[in-house]
Length: 328
Ligand code: UT7
Image (cartoon, rainbow, N blue to C red; front, top):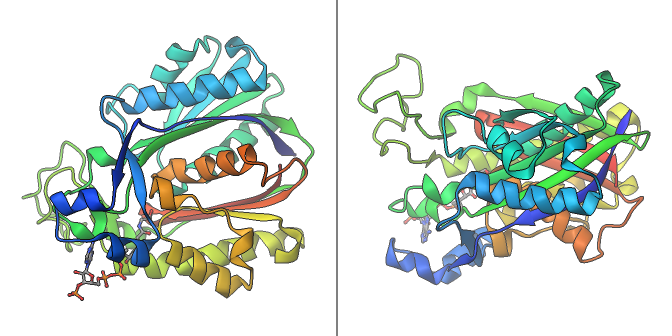
Protein backbone atom coordinates (compact mmCIF):
# COMPACT_ATOMS: atom_id res chain seq x y z
CA UNK A 1 0.00 0.00 0.00
CA UNK A 2 1.20 3.48 -0.85
CA UNK A 3 -0.02 6.94 0.04
CA UNK A 4 -1.41 9.89 -1.81
CA UNK A 5 -0.26 13.34 -0.78
CA UNK A 6 -3.53 15.21 -1.16
CA UNK A 7 -2.28 18.71 -0.41
CA UNK A 8 0.47 20.93 0.96
CA UNK A 9 0.51 23.96 3.18
CA UNK A 10 3.49 25.94 4.38
CA UNK A 11 4.39 28.90 6.48
CA UNK A 12 7.67 30.78 6.72
CA UNK A 13 8.35 33.61 9.17
CA UNK A 14 8.08 37.19 8.02
CA UNK A 15 11.63 38.09 9.00
CA UNK A 16 14.49 37.41 6.54
CA UNK A 17 18.15 37.27 7.53
CA UNK A 18 20.69 37.77 4.73
CA UNK A 19 24.27 36.55 4.80
CA UNK A 20 25.41 40.09 5.40
CA UNK A 21 23.26 40.28 8.55
CA UNK A 22 25.55 37.65 10.13
CA UNK A 23 28.52 40.01 9.98
CA UNK A 24 26.90 41.66 13.01
CA UNK A 25 27.43 38.51 15.13
CA UNK A 26 30.48 36.73 13.72
CA UNK A 27 33.46 37.22 11.44
CA UNK A 28 32.04 36.07 8.11
CA UNK A 29 31.03 37.37 4.72
CA UNK A 30 28.46 36.78 2.01
CA UNK A 31 30.97 35.26 -0.38
CA UNK A 32 32.16 32.58 2.07
CA UNK A 33 28.61 31.56 2.95
CA UNK A 34 27.44 31.46 -0.69
CA UNK A 35 30.37 29.48 -2.01
CA UNK A 36 30.69 27.04 0.93
CA UNK A 37 26.97 26.41 1.45
CA UNK A 38 24.85 27.87 -1.36
CA UNK A 39 22.78 29.79 1.18
CA UNK A 40 21.86 33.41 0.43
CA UNK A 41 19.17 34.13 2.98
CA UNK A 42 16.90 32.37 5.46
CA UNK A 43 13.75 33.10 7.47
CA UNK A 44 13.96 33.65 11.22
CA UNK A 45 11.01 33.29 13.55
CA UNK A 46 10.51 36.46 15.52
CA UNK A 47 7.21 36.44 17.34
CA UNK A 48 6.09 33.13 15.80
CA UNK A 49 6.23 30.10 18.13
CA UNK A 50 6.95 26.68 16.60
CA UNK A 51 3.35 25.53 17.08
CA UNK A 52 2.04 28.66 15.35
CA UNK A 53 4.04 28.05 12.18
CA UNK A 54 2.94 24.41 12.17
CA UNK A 55 -0.71 25.33 12.71
CA UNK A 56 -0.64 27.89 9.88
CA UNK A 57 0.90 25.35 7.49
CA UNK A 58 -1.66 22.74 8.62
CA UNK A 59 -4.68 25.00 8.13
CA UNK A 60 -3.61 25.67 4.55
CA UNK A 61 -3.01 21.97 3.84
CA UNK A 62 -6.40 20.99 5.29
CA UNK A 63 -8.20 23.67 3.27
CA UNK A 64 -6.48 22.61 0.05
CA UNK A 65 -7.27 18.94 0.69
CA UNK A 66 -10.94 19.94 0.80
CA UNK A 67 -11.59 17.87 3.92
CA UNK A 68 -13.02 18.73 7.32
CA UNK A 69 -10.49 18.87 10.20
CA UNK A 70 -12.82 16.47 12.00
CA UNK A 71 -11.97 13.77 9.43
CA UNK A 72 -8.30 13.72 10.39
CA UNK A 73 -7.51 10.67 12.51
CA UNK A 74 -3.86 11.26 13.27
CA UNK A 75 -1.47 14.21 13.48
CA UNK A 76 2.28 13.59 13.48
CA UNK A 77 4.40 16.64 14.08
CA UNK A 78 8.14 16.59 13.48
CA UNK A 79 10.34 19.07 15.27
CA UNK A 80 13.59 19.44 17.15
CA UNK A 81 12.50 22.83 18.45
CA UNK A 82 9.32 22.19 20.37
CA UNK A 83 8.01 25.18 22.33
CA UNK A 84 7.36 22.83 25.25
CA UNK A 85 8.92 19.68 26.66
CA UNK A 86 5.30 18.69 27.08
CA UNK A 87 2.59 18.85 25.68
CA UNK A 88 3.54 17.83 22.18
CA UNK A 89 3.37 20.32 19.33
CA UNK A 90 0.94 17.89 17.66
CA UNK A 91 -1.56 18.25 20.50
CA UNK A 92 -1.36 22.04 20.41
CA UNK A 93 -1.75 22.04 16.61
CA UNK A 94 -4.66 19.61 16.89
CA UNK A 95 -6.55 22.15 18.97
CA UNK A 96 -5.67 25.11 16.75
CA UNK A 97 -6.87 23.40 13.57
CA UNK A 98 -9.97 21.81 15.13
CA UNK A 99 -8.99 18.19 14.47
CA UNK A 100 -11.11 16.99 17.39
CA UNK A 101 -11.15 13.33 16.35
CA UNK A 102 -7.43 12.94 15.92
CA UNK A 103 -4.67 11.22 17.84
CA UNK A 104 -1.56 13.38 18.07
CA UNK A 105 2.12 12.90 18.80
CA UNK A 106 5.51 14.41 18.01
CA UNK A 107 8.31 12.55 16.31
CA UNK A 108 11.92 13.62 16.58
CA UNK A 109 14.24 12.20 13.97
CA UNK A 110 15.93 15.57 13.48
CA UNK A 111 16.34 16.59 9.83
CA UNK A 112 15.14 13.14 8.73
CA UNK A 113 11.90 13.75 10.65
CA UNK A 114 9.61 14.23 7.65
CA UNK A 115 10.79 10.96 6.08
CA UNK A 116 10.22 9.09 9.34
CA UNK A 117 6.82 10.75 9.84
CA UNK A 118 5.51 10.16 6.33
CA UNK A 119 6.56 6.53 6.60
CA UNK A 120 4.90 6.25 10.02
CA UNK A 121 1.73 7.78 8.55
CA UNK A 122 1.75 5.17 5.79
CA UNK A 123 2.12 2.37 8.33
CA UNK A 124 -0.82 3.69 10.40
CA UNK A 125 -2.95 4.01 7.27
CA UNK A 126 -2.04 0.48 6.21
CA UNK A 127 -3.04 -1.09 9.52
CA UNK A 128 -6.09 0.93 10.58
CA UNK A 129 -9.16 0.61 8.36
CA UNK A 130 -10.91 3.41 10.21
CA UNK A 131 -8.15 5.93 9.56
CA UNK A 132 -8.81 8.07 6.49
CA UNK A 133 -6.51 11.06 6.71
CA UNK A 134 -3.21 11.76 8.44
CA UNK A 135 -1.78 15.25 8.84
CA UNK A 136 2.02 15.35 8.88
CA UNK A 137 3.44 18.66 10.02
CA UNK A 138 7.11 19.62 10.08
CA UNK A 139 7.74 22.80 12.01
CA UNK A 140 11.09 24.20 13.11
CA UNK A 141 12.49 27.32 14.75
CA UNK A 142 16.21 26.49 14.68
CA UNK A 143 17.07 30.15 15.29
CA UNK A 144 15.99 29.66 18.92
CA UNK A 145 18.81 27.27 19.71
CA UNK A 146 21.65 27.98 17.36
CA UNK A 147 24.80 29.51 18.78
CA UNK A 148 25.15 32.95 17.21
CA UNK A 149 28.82 32.99 18.29
CA UNK A 150 29.66 29.91 16.20
CA UNK A 151 30.23 31.03 12.60
CA UNK A 152 30.55 27.46 11.39
CA UNK A 153 26.96 26.63 12.26
CA UNK A 154 24.83 29.74 12.84
CA UNK A 155 24.85 30.74 9.18
CA UNK A 156 23.33 27.42 8.08
CA UNK A 157 19.92 27.33 9.65
CA UNK A 158 16.51 28.85 9.07
CA UNK A 159 12.95 28.53 10.34
CA UNK A 160 9.71 27.43 8.73
CA UNK A 161 6.95 24.84 8.58
CA UNK A 162 5.25 22.64 6.01
CA UNK A 163 2.33 20.23 6.28
CA UNK A 164 0.74 17.55 4.13
CA UNK A 165 -2.55 15.67 4.29
CA UNK A 166 -2.17 12.04 3.23
CA UNK A 167 -4.54 9.20 2.47
CA UNK A 168 -4.22 5.57 1.41
CA UNK A 169 -3.47 4.82 -2.22
CA UNK A 170 -2.03 2.09 -4.40
CA UNK A 171 0.63 4.36 -5.89
CA UNK A 172 4.28 3.35 -5.94
CA UNK A 173 5.85 3.61 -2.48
CA UNK A 174 8.99 2.27 -0.84
CA UNK A 175 11.09 3.49 2.05
CA UNK A 176 14.24 3.02 4.04
CA UNK A 177 14.78 4.32 7.59
CA UNK A 178 18.11 4.16 9.37
CA UNK A 179 20.19 5.56 12.19
CA UNK A 180 23.83 5.52 13.24
CA UNK A 181 23.86 6.50 16.90
CA UNK A 182 27.64 6.31 17.04
CA UNK A 183 27.63 9.79 15.48
CA UNK A 184 25.19 11.26 18.00
CA UNK A 185 27.72 13.72 19.40
CA UNK A 186 28.43 15.25 15.97
CA UNK A 187 25.19 17.21 15.96
CA UNK A 188 23.50 17.82 19.25
CA UNK A 189 22.01 20.19 21.81
CA UNK A 190 21.49 19.51 25.51
CA UNK A 191 18.00 19.27 26.91
CA UNK A 192 16.90 21.19 29.97
CA UNK A 193 17.75 18.68 32.65
CA UNK A 194 21.41 17.93 32.01
CA UNK A 195 23.79 20.63 33.15
CA UNK A 196 26.90 21.04 30.98
CA UNK A 197 29.23 20.31 33.90
CA UNK A 198 27.82 16.79 34.29
CA UNK A 199 30.33 14.37 32.80
CA UNK A 200 29.00 11.22 31.20
CA UNK A 201 31.57 8.50 30.79
CA UNK A 202 31.66 7.32 27.19
CA UNK A 203 28.77 9.66 26.52
CA UNK A 204 28.35 12.89 24.67
CA UNK A 205 31.29 14.64 26.28
CA UNK A 206 33.52 14.84 23.24
CA UNK A 207 33.52 18.37 21.92
CA UNK A 208 30.21 19.03 23.53
CA UNK A 209 30.48 19.93 27.20
CA UNK A 210 32.15 23.26 26.51
CA UNK A 211 29.25 24.42 24.42
CA UNK A 212 26.65 26.79 25.82
CA UNK A 213 23.65 25.09 27.39
CA UNK A 214 20.82 24.37 24.91
CA UNK A 215 22.80 25.58 21.93
CA UNK A 216 23.41 23.50 18.85
CA UNK A 217 26.84 21.93 18.54
CA UNK A 218 27.95 20.62 15.17
CA UNK A 219 31.04 18.90 13.87
CA UNK A 220 30.54 20.15 10.32
CA UNK A 221 33.19 18.01 8.69
CA UNK A 222 31.89 14.72 10.16
CA UNK A 223 28.29 15.56 9.29
CA UNK A 224 29.37 16.53 5.79
CA UNK A 225 31.11 13.18 5.25
CA UNK A 226 28.12 11.30 6.65
CA UNK A 227 25.63 13.23 4.50
CA UNK A 228 27.45 12.75 1.20
CA UNK A 229 27.67 9.04 1.95
CA UNK A 230 24.10 8.33 3.06
CA UNK A 231 22.23 10.36 0.42
CA UNK A 232 23.23 8.03 -2.44
CA UNK A 233 23.28 5.00 -0.12
CA UNK A 234 19.68 5.42 1.00
CA UNK A 235 18.44 5.90 -2.56
CA UNK A 236 20.32 2.84 -3.78
CA UNK A 237 18.88 0.68 -0.98
CA UNK A 238 15.31 1.67 -1.89
CA UNK A 239 15.93 1.39 -5.62
CA UNK A 240 17.26 -2.15 -5.29
CA UNK A 241 14.31 -3.10 -3.03
CA UNK A 242 11.77 -2.28 -5.73
CA UNK A 243 13.89 -2.78 -8.83
CA UNK A 244 14.02 0.78 -10.13
CA UNK A 245 16.96 2.86 -11.30
CA UNK A 246 17.83 6.54 -11.01
CA UNK A 247 16.46 7.00 -14.56
CA UNK A 248 12.97 6.11 -13.28
CA UNK A 249 13.02 9.06 -10.89
CA UNK A 250 11.75 12.44 -12.10
CA UNK A 251 12.79 14.46 -9.06
CA UNK A 252 15.15 14.04 -6.13
CA UNK A 253 14.16 16.07 -3.07
CA UNK A 254 17.06 15.90 -0.61
CA UNK A 255 17.37 17.45 2.83
CA UNK A 256 18.51 21.03 2.28
CA UNK A 257 21.70 21.46 4.32
CA UNK A 258 24.44 22.54 1.93
CA UNK A 259 24.37 22.68 -1.88
CA UNK A 260 27.84 21.10 -1.95
CA UNK A 261 26.44 18.05 -0.16
CA UNK A 262 23.70 17.78 -2.81
CA UNK A 263 26.17 18.27 -5.67
CA UNK A 264 28.47 15.57 -4.32
CA UNK A 265 25.55 13.16 -3.86
CA UNK A 266 24.30 13.93 -7.37
CA UNK A 267 27.74 13.17 -8.76
CA UNK A 268 27.99 9.90 -6.81
CA UNK A 269 24.58 8.87 -8.10
CA UNK A 270 25.38 9.98 -11.63
CA UNK A 271 22.29 12.20 -11.72
CA UNK A 272 22.17 15.73 -13.14
CA UNK A 273 21.64 18.55 -10.63
CA UNK A 274 18.67 19.58 -12.82
CA UNK A 275 16.77 16.69 -11.26
CA UNK A 276 17.35 17.93 -7.70
CA UNK A 277 15.00 20.37 -6.02
CA UNK A 278 17.07 23.00 -4.19
CA UNK A 279 15.52 25.66 -1.97
CA UNK A 280 18.31 26.15 0.58
CA UNK A 281 19.43 29.32 -1.18
CA UNK A 282 16.41 31.14 0.25
CA UNK A 283 15.45 29.02 3.28
CA UNK A 284 18.75 27.65 4.59
CA UNK A 285 18.56 24.41 6.54
CA UNK A 286 15.13 24.18 8.20
CA UNK A 287 15.74 20.68 9.62
CA UNK A 288 12.69 18.43 9.22
CA UNK A 289 10.75 21.17 7.40
CA UNK A 290 13.29 21.36 4.58
CA UNK A 291 12.08 18.40 2.47
CA UNK A 292 8.35 19.25 2.60
CA UNK A 293 9.09 22.95 2.02
CA UNK A 294 11.13 22.08 -1.08
CA UNK A 295 8.46 19.58 -2.18
CA UNK A 296 5.66 22.14 -1.72
CA UNK A 297 7.53 24.81 -3.62
CA UNK A 298 8.27 22.55 -6.57
CA UNK A 299 4.62 21.49 -6.74
CA UNK A 300 3.47 25.09 -6.52
CA UNK A 301 5.75 26.32 -9.30
CA UNK A 302 4.72 23.42 -11.55
CA UNK A 303 8.01 21.51 -11.61
CA UNK A 304 6.57 18.46 -9.86
CA UNK A 305 3.39 17.12 -11.44
CA UNK A 306 0.93 14.38 -10.55
CA UNK A 307 2.33 11.02 -11.62
CA UNK A 308 5.96 12.08 -11.20
CA UNK A 309 8.23 9.62 -9.41
CA UNK A 310 10.08 11.19 -6.53
CA UNK A 311 12.97 10.29 -4.26
CA UNK A 312 12.87 12.09 -0.91
CA UNK A 313 16.08 11.58 1.07
CA UNK A 314 16.94 12.95 4.50
CA UNK A 315 19.84 12.92 6.94
CA UNK A 316 20.53 14.65 10.21
CA UNK A 317 21.20 14.46 13.91
CA UNK A 318 21.08 11.03 15.44
CA UNK A 319 22.68 10.46 13.09
CA UNK A 320 19.48 9.51 11.29
CA UNK A 321 18.92 9.02 7.60
CA UNK A 322 16.45 7.52 5.22
CA UNK A 323 14.38 7.98 2.14
CA UNK A 324 11.11 7.42 0.36
CA UNK A 325 10.54 6.70 -3.32
CA UNK A 326 6.96 7.50 -4.24
CA UNK A 327 4.63 8.64 -6.95
CA UNK A 328 3.14 12.09 -6.44
O1 UT7 B 1 21.07 19.02 8.83
C1 UT7 B 1 22.38 18.53 8.85
C2 UT7 B 1 23.20 19.60 9.43
N1 UT7 B 1 24.46 19.98 9.01
C3 UT7 B 1 25.12 19.80 7.87
O2 UT7 B 1 24.76 19.15 6.94
C4 UT7 B 1 26.45 20.50 7.82
C5 UT7 B 1 27.51 19.71 7.13
N2 UT7 B 1 28.73 20.46 7.06
C6 UT7 B 1 28.92 21.55 6.23
O3 UT7 B 1 28.00 21.93 5.50
C7 UT7 B 1 30.28 22.20 6.21
O4 UT7 B 1 31.20 21.40 6.91
C8 UT7 B 1 30.27 23.65 6.81
C9 UT7 B 1 29.48 24.57 5.90
C10 UT7 B 1 29.66 23.63 8.20
C11 UT7 B 1 31.71 24.15 6.88
O5 UT7 B 1 32.28 24.17 5.57
P1 UT7 B 1 33.75 23.63 5.35
O6 UT7 B 1 34.07 23.82 3.92
O7 UT7 B 1 33.82 22.23 5.91
O8 UT7 B 1 34.60 24.65 6.19
P2 UT7 B 1 35.61 24.33 7.40
O9 UT7 B 1 34.85 23.95 8.61
O10 UT7 B 1 36.68 23.39 6.90
O11 UT7 B 1 36.28 25.72 7.60
C12 UT7 B 1 37.17 26.30 6.64
C13 UT7 B 1 37.58 27.64 7.15
C14 UT7 B 1 38.02 27.65 8.61
O12 UT7 B 1 39.03 28.60 8.74
P3 UT7 B 1 40.58 28.16 8.81
O13 UT7 B 1 40.67 27.22 9.98
O14 UT7 B 1 40.85 27.48 7.50
O15 UT7 B 1 41.30 29.43 8.97
C15 UT7 B 1 36.80 28.13 9.36
O16 UT7 B 1 37.11 28.75 10.57
O17 UT7 B 1 36.44 28.53 7.09
C16 UT7 B 1 36.24 29.13 8.37
N3 UT7 B 1 34.81 29.38 8.56
C17 UT7 B 1 34.24 30.52 8.14
N4 UT7 B 1 34.73 31.62 7.54
C18 UT7 B 1 33.86 32.61 7.26
C19 UT7 B 1 33.87 28.57 9.11
N5 UT7 B 1 32.69 29.18 9.07
C20 UT7 B 1 32.88 30.39 8.48
C21 UT7 B 1 32.02 31.45 8.17
N6 UT7 B 1 32.55 32.53 7.55
N7 UT7 B 1 30.70 31.42 8.45
